[in-house]
Amino acid sequence: MSVTLTQFVLSIFLFFALSRTFLRLRSGELSLIGFFFWSAIFSLAIIIVLFPELTSFVASPLGIGRGADVVVYVSIALLFYLVFRLYIFLEDIRHEITKLVQQIALQNDTKKSKK
Image (tube, rainbow, N blue to C red):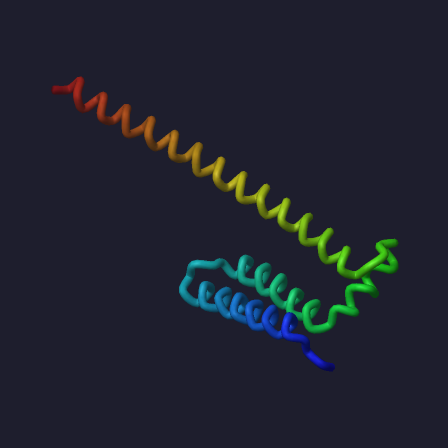
């Protein structure tokens, strides 16, 4: 197997990203579920970069012409899902901040009315 420059550079980047997930897990910034999710994503990407012909085996049964198209379709679907999850997370934070601001405002109002 001869590795092209592109495969080499992408592999180095993906191994670096994989190492970051491990360090984030050790520091407590990443949950175990998050670690397994991102490790699986980066590991799968490394396998696809090093063995691109594997994507053709997945593409054929799905009726997709090229393996690269499968990678693009799956990547887009995954990105949409992650953006959705991020949106929901931000909405939850926005609601929590609104509740906290209301509680602080009510506490300040009751303190002023007691004086």
